[in-house]
Length: 149
Image (cartoon, rainbow, N blue to C red; front, top):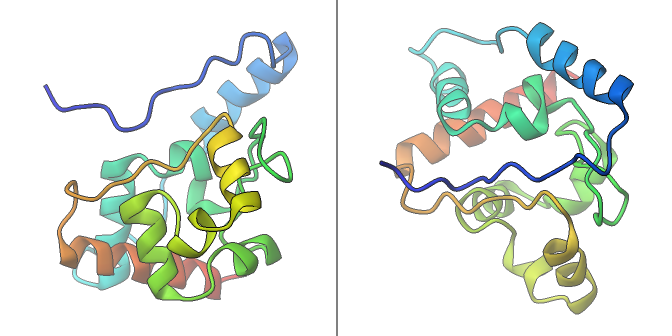
């Protein structure tokens, strides 16, 4: 059995019955992410995203802003937001987010690290769970999504 990287946080005390119903509807209706052609880096990146379960936190195409209790702004930033631009300065920092759960720049900043460690949903570190090509394909997919604002 593979070790689970992302553990589902307990939201019982944080969601109303209506919010839970809305969440179930959203997850059910989210559908497929594009592109699906696995002959392109973006398509292969989408397949990596699906395999790793990234959309379960970031939403379809990384465009959701789900609540994240304890996070600086209270939510997981969408990939096409101005928040993203502050959190991910370049493709290398995106690689660090994926591999290590956060870039060195933020982990070494005491204020930023406080929120990284305090938030309920933490970005998992996928180092050792994807190869270099899968990482590059995932970066290509995120960059593709960001161009479709």
